[in-house]
Amino acid sequence: MSEKKVWGVVLPGIFVIGILIVFSITNTSLGDPEVKIIREEAMFSGIKIPDSLTFAGERVPLEYFDIRESLERELLVNAYFHSQTIRFIKLAPRYFSVIEPILKEKGIPDDFKYLAVAESNLDPKAVSPANAVGMWQFLKVTAKEYGLEVNDEVDERYHLEKSTYAACDYLKSAYDKFGSWALVAAAYNAGRTFTVNQMERQKNNIYFDMLLGDETERYVFRILALKMVMEHPQDYGFNISDDEKYPIIPTQEIVITGPVSNLADFAKEHGTSYKILKMFNPWLRENYLTNNSGKKYVIKIPVPGARSGNINSTQN
Image 1 (cartoon, rainbow, N blue to C red):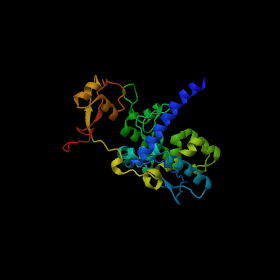
Image 2: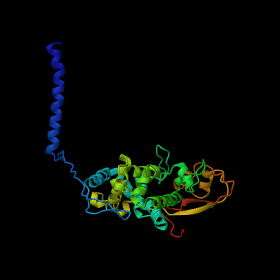
Image 3: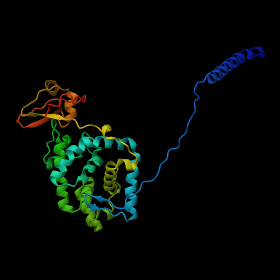
Image 4: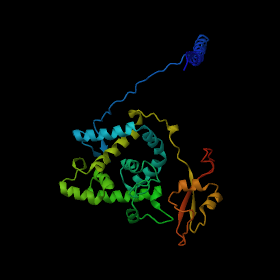
């Protein structure tokens, strides 16, 4: 390329750069705010382990280094998994308002509501890779053993109240066998047969002294960590006000003793949508309910105005 052509390319570029510099200086002189990049260093710290702790009224032996470190591991996971833990805190009032009274009625320690969190992440529609279903993650055979209806049209593992009652019966039966709530929780995760076999193999019946495989060894500590963070969220840096938590949606009950040919039509007839009907009744697995036997089912839908927050105070 000739010298003349080179300057023909370079000069326009220099001219444009000059204009931009002048424009920038002019803007600054006219008082435009100066853009500043502020770098803030994130500060992370360890988790303080309490002096004492109980699970379902049973003492946790925090004087042992392995117990302290196991607890700290799960506290770190939950305290620094911010998005998930915030969601747990916000969801808790909605689901604990159902679970807590049933646990109390059935004589199961209140701490077991955190087992439901560990099992399903407070998702009543949760399904595991092993096809365990619902808030309490029942397998089909166990669900049927404890009185839950499971078929193509109805799966009561997704029914929060009924599955909670079934879980309480399972937990009470396990406690009668093991005599330790920590072992009951471990057995809920690993299975009773495995737990019994390990007790015999290790000649030990204390959860905190047993070798049970990574998942089960972490399980009770995960429940404990969830309990600690969700009961005292501000101690772990979570500032969630009550009005930020998800509200308890008031519902009305519709009793069904016969077939429903189309649940979408049924929803419209009762002033709601198919989506909302299934949201509040995930145990209905089809868009119809055959029910030729005349069995009684109770379908819940939000009271008028509840979806928008404009609740009619005259509703029961």
